Amino acid sequence: MNEHSFIFVPEKLRIRDENKELAIRETALKMLVEQGFDGMSMQKLATAAGVSPATLYIYYKNREDMLNQLFTHVHETFAEVALKNFSPEMSLEQGLWIQWKNRARFITEYPNYFKFFELFRNSPQIDHCKVNMAAFKQSMQLFVKNAIERKELKKMETEVFWSVAYGTFYSLMKFHVQEKSMMNKKFKVTDAIMKQTLKMVVKALKQ
Amino acid sequence: MNEHSFIFVPEKLRIRDENKELAIRETALKMLVEQGFDGMSMQKLATAAGVSPATLYIYYKNREDMLNQLFTHVHETFAEVALKNFSPEMSLEQGLWIQWKNRARFITEYPNYFKFFELFRNSPQIDHCKVNMAAFKQSMQLFVKNAIERKELKKMETEVFWSVAYGTFYSLMKFHVQEKSMMNKKFKVTDAIMKQTLKMVVKALKQ
DNA sequence: AATATAAATGAATGTTCATTCACTTAAAAG
DNA sequence: CTTTTAAGTGAATGAACATTCATTTATATT
Image 1: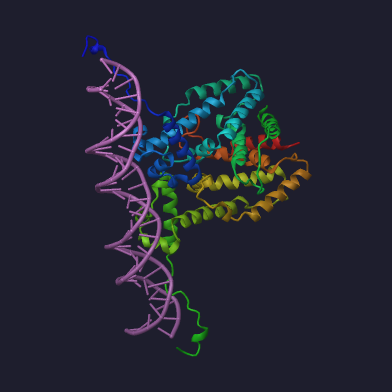
Image 2 (image 1 turned 45 degrees about the vertical axis):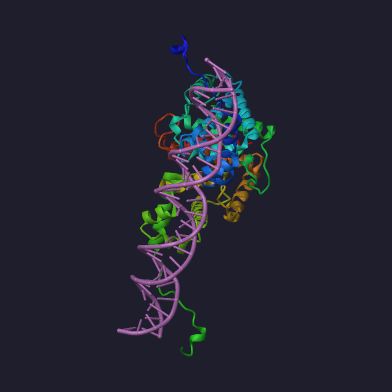
């Protein structure tokens, strides 16, 4: 001990392998999306990710905690991307277009994130309340308020607005990520289809 | 053996307890909806339904078969209700209204069926192809064809139509069955809300 | 009442599960 | 080079899992 020891704050003497953390997360998502809930056990995940089962418990308190953290991570990443280049001051059409494009890019780039999100969205074991959406909600509410003032949007319940403006979009994207869509062939959401659908939605929402 | 024995087809000498089958199904649905995939094990289900675990294997080949049969049952019941009083000759607005009403009634009456359906819809372990939707699809396609001919509907991809006409509706109903909706209060889909939303959707779909 | 047969069962089986723990390894700081 | 500390591990544990099987039970027919 030297004279500085009493203010010495020990630094980390061995740093976590961040590749390992990433590997665990991506492998877990892949297993969950491809094989469902029962398909992902801690031991199978550990083997597939190339780590010891015990290592998982360094990163996560237990299985439930892991699932919650996975969901939170996916949700936060998604929310962040969704609002990129978006401002609540935009017109309804422009604001929706930006958000649709952001989301579509994300879903196409990381389909597993979307599939995982959809898989767990209605799942009772996820603690939805823990996910912080305050900033997201606030931004959206301002956007809606502005659109109503500009007469681009009828007065309606938030849930009705959401269903028309986003329910439609997500339904479309679900077809996009499916192997086979309604007509037994692969369906791709192109820019043209998105634009066409957006026009319809904007028309529906206008007074 | 008497002279008739060679044409004797043995009849059932003990009849399956149909209450038992119903109890198993409803208990399984309840457990799955409330506790998710991991929450329902064969032993816990047997105990909760008041039967022996071995009894489950009289009704179902194995766990996977049980889940598939549950899904198929729910899906078929739902499809049947959805088309009640519906005819492909109806106008777009009337036809959609009937179907929305049918579905809303069903979802409100049997929320577990809907929650189960949503829980498993994206689940990889369900063999979706086994569900026969031929008649359903045919009826819907004729409905769409008629609407286009009457100029009530723009020409568009089936998936786009479905997303606008039903994606919106299902999004609304998801809020309906949730404990707390977007605004942290209970949201109920009333007839007025359905009518308002339908008007918007019909407007969007019209040329 | 006796018979035949499928429904229904409780206990048992081997497997896989989540989780733990005594231990080893890596690397920053002295 | 030594010390310190957290990262990382392989093997082990008991609980819960899906499934089976030798029996028992209920009932339509004879």
